[in-house]
Length: 137
Image (cartoon, helix red, strand yellow):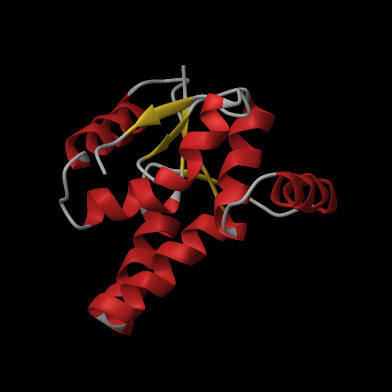
């Protein structure tokens, strides 16, 4: 089974917060186990980038972006018209940030659990909208 990551998950790992070990284990599996992937939307990668810019500076954010392109064992997924439409539908029905809606949409599309600790997602899991692997929050 593969997983989908959101910005919360990657930031947890990058900042060595509680739950970082869980994210590290998924990334290690993606790097070594054939068929296992850590899927993530480019939108969520952009969210990680801007948060790193704010907290650690542009240099750290640029280094992260280079890692994504070269060595970080994640599989970025692009934005398409169909994905945007589904994200808009999710956002219209459920209260969540737009970037979170991209993470939820991707997990639903892939039929995979979303790795997050974002409490905003809890209601969606309770309503059966998305399966979640919870990180501490």
